[in-house]
Image (cartoon, rainbow, N blue to C red):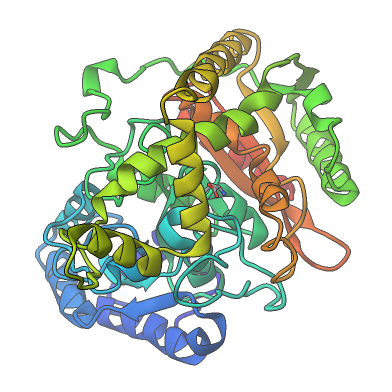
Length: 471
Ligand code: GLN
C-alpha cells in the first residue's frame, strides 16, 4: 500500500527511482481513491481513459534514465486547461462536448517530462465564482467537511488533492481562484507573477488578470510543479522573456501588514485571531513585522468587478453556437446566438456578461472601465513602492472560513467579498501564495496569504517553508 496521505513529489520520485513501486502502481493507487471517493466529493468530471498509457511512457523514462522530478507524478487538471484530444468544458454546458485540438503550453512541458494527467476536475463555470456552485456539473464537496464548499473557482482542483485523489494539481487564478480554495481545504496554492507561466491553451476568462498555477499539500510540491511550468512561451504575448526575469535574490525578512485594510467590515473574528497568531510565530522565527499604509488597496475589489466582467464579455463573445461546442439550431442566425448562449451559459456567467457589456457600452466606458484602469495603475504603483520597504505583504487569504452550500450563492455581493485579500495580487500582476495556517473551532481550514514583488516567487517559497515548520 502506498501512503498517499503523506506522499510528496520528492518521496514519490525516490520510490519510483529505487523501484519500490512503478508509475502504474502509483497511478492505480490514485485511481482507487478516485473510485472510492469521487461519487461523494465530485472533484473529477472525467478520469482520462489513457492514464495507464501515460504511465507506461513515464516508466520508460525511469528505465532509460531520463526521468526528472515531475516524471510519473499523477496530477489533476482544472477543466479549463487544453489537453489534446480530451474534453475541456470550463464546467459549462456551452463547451460540454468541446474536445481540445492542441495541448496548452504547460501541458506540452509536463508531457515532455512524463507527468501523468489523471483527469479533469470541476470548477465554477468559466472560473467565475468562489464556491464551485456555479459549475454546470454539480457541486464539489469540501473533503475536510462535506457540508462546506471547497471554495472556488478551483474547487474540484483542491478537492482532488485534499481527498488524496491526485498528488498535485493545476488551477487558474484570476482573482483568487487558486488561493482561496487552497485555504478552504488546508492546501498550498500559488498564483505566479502575471506572465511567468504561459496561458496559451487555457480557456480565457479575464485576460489581463488570468494566471495558471500549482496546488499541493506543501510548499515544496508547489515549488517543484511551478518550476516545471515556469518558462517563456512565444505563443503567449504576455509571457515574460528570459532576459527580463530578475536575478535579485535579496531578502530582509521584513513583512508588511496593511493594518487599516484588515480593520474593515466583514472580516471574521476567528480569521483575524488566527492571522495574529501566525504573525507572532513568524516573529519568533526572526521576521520583522511592520505596519504598512496602503490606502488604495481597498479599491481593488471594486476595480476587479469592473475589469473582470468587461474582459469576460469580450472573451466569451466567441461562444456563439457556430465555432465551438453547443449549437442550438434556428432559422435565423441571431436566434442561433441567442438560444445557444441563453441555454449554454449559467446564471452567474450571464450576470457578468450583462455587467461587462454595460460597462463597455458607449457612454459608460469612460465612467467605469477607463476609471477602473486608472485606479488599477495607482494600486499597482502603491504596491510596487511599498516593496522598497518590505519583502512581502501578509494578510489572511479569505475574510471568512469555508461556508456552507447555499449560504452565499443567493447574494452575489457577499460571494464577491471572498476575493477581498486575493484580488490585489491579480490587479498588480504580482505573485502570491496561500498557506495553511490552522483551523477554526469547528475544524475548518484557514489560510495565510503572502504577496511578493513581481518575479519574486522565491520569497514566497522561502517564507512558506519557514511558516510550514511553525504551524
Ligand atoms: N471569485 C472570483 C470571481 O468570481 C475569482 C475567480 C477566479 O480567480 N477565477 O471572479
